[in-house]
Image (cartoon, rainbow, N blue to C red; front, side, top):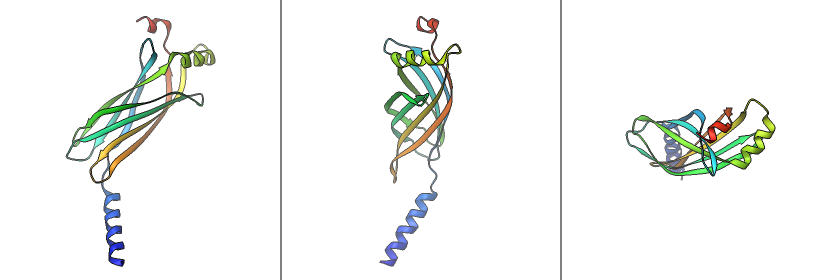
Length: 151
């Protein structure tokens, strides 16, 4: 039994030391207004240390402002991470018009809102299985203006 425990510990230590993909949110900006919602674009860079591409299972997102969740969703099957390279992912965050109208009443003249964007990047790592890379960023984004709606 002692030998089995030693083998488990050895494998656990090796797995813990293995490099894993790393990610960062580069930018969050207004993209466009649609009939259903306002879209914001989050640009995410992911570095893959492996010599093989890695499938991305999904990306989940939560956008908060003034301690309220204003958008929640997932991007199913967004592609793969390039082998031994950085991959730029574009995550479209959709915020319903009704929520933005309520925010607009609260913010006044500057049309900026403070936000927190939380992303969960779920990738399928060999040996590990599904692995989630959690990301979070705080900042300010512009609410769309009337001219944005008719552009």
